[in-house]
Length: 212
Image (cartoon, rainbow, N blue to C red):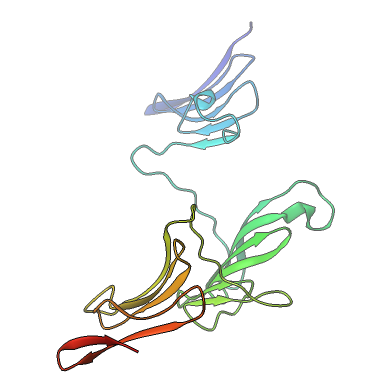
């Protein structure tokens, strides 16, 4: 095995070590860039093989805090693309893209835009221009939003809150008896629709509760 070391000294020292299997760039005696025998690259790390083999083509270790910055022009895009080929959208079957012109963060899947977060924090699923905090738009046909549970006895809930109370009202579907319940004014259930479609409503009558 042949080893080669090139050293550059400027007060401290730097060297590039070639041992026939790896390349190691050191500055001040500390490894800054390491390429292992498989061609995997470590920035600040020489233990590339210690990480998951599905994700260690590039390992960045900055110590306590690490980060990678993608710099683009003020009207350009910064993109991380996931490809499985070179033809058409095979080159970007999935992607994360920041558009500086509109300050929007975009997520792509299947070679097309899947979700967008705009400069106001609005989230669009299936749309590049969300009109509210959450805007779900189908490419065609009906648009659906699912709230599911992992069994047949739990409850699916949509909760409404404000600055004074995070749980002031809500809609609840009870999967045990297949009833829809309406909760209001932080005072519990006010109305329900049972599995037969019958409606039960509760209201105060002289400090008592009655059903109609």
